Length: 403
Ligand SMILES: Nc1nc2c(ncn2[C@@H]2O[C@H](COP(=O)(O)OP(=O)(O)OP(=O)(O)O)[C@@H](O)[C@H]2O)c(=O)[nH]1
Ligand SMILES: [Mg+2]
Image 1 (tube, rainbow, N blue to C red):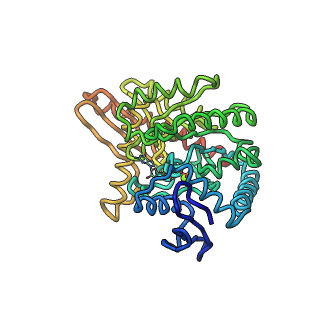
Image 2 (spheres, rainbow, N blue to C red; image 1 turned 120 degrees about the vertical axis):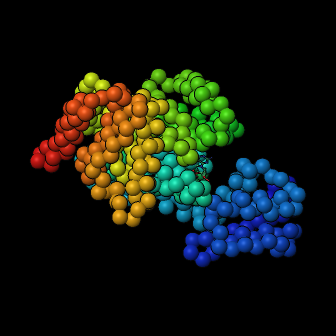
């Protein structure tokens, strides 16, 4: 039982059924509040609401501290054992897989920054409204994905609550950062009160990445950008704010779960870690060099990520948005028209001609032509080159299988 500072109330936690807890609050020695079946991350809100109902306001950090102390008394070793157990399990799994070109991505940031939502939106296809109830991550979560055989990211999602950060700075440091290819640091752009804490943690994470790895890729997501008014100004501010003490190259992305920005950002990261991306880039470039071809993009069907592209970032976002719409349309509009059966799609406007063809079971190629007045013969020629490119890309996969 702990005294709530500045009040006459005491608060205590006990274990309840299936990993949940009970909260009790006493006024002097009289029990005045009781709630069972709650999760750790709900405690703060419940105690705060209770105090507010009594017209009392206590700063969050003071409440967090007594909650942390009370949790320690409840099960002194539980968190530590949980995290260490998880990490050794993950490490074992990672070491088994590392020969298969699995790339470790460390996803870090303060609590509530949006880390878990960021990969669930892209890799698990969740819609923004399905993410709004996201629960705080307990310790470290890890997930393995495959992006159309282009790359196999293994994402380490590091829960950002203070109790976990303390662990990362301590005994878990090496396990987290060793053999990591990418640091993806997430900042809640709408939470200006925590910018400095976020920067300190970012600098520390970058130093760890650099001390354990040769050429790590460093990325910052300025996330929840939908809540920010002047997006451009904030991006410029952060480049200066975070980049001052770091000489290593950092890529910045403004992201939100409410638009396509996460897809563009992840496309960039996936390309950076894919051994095939240089080849894909060269093949797409050769297609772009054809007379009349404006751009070409290779898209993975399940995630909608662009595995290669000749477009600039803004245009790429539009094409990715259009493709995800197409995927949803094909999948949802008619039950019989399944997207996996897709072969080809053509769209002709007065100014453009768009050709989307199937490349492999996982990939499709988008070719954008810019001249409206093509003769049929010319179109056929370009389509033939597009098909050639599709074959070259497909061969890239079958050659590897033969190896
Ligand atoms: N407005 C807005 N809210 C978002 C966005 N992304 C996530 N959120 C909200 O932010 C909250 C926290 O998201 P999480 O992904 O659970 O945060 P986290 O960084 O994993 O938090 P920890 O696991 O505690 O470290 C959720 O309630 C989301 O609804 C976004 O792009 N815009
Ligand atoms: Mg999380």
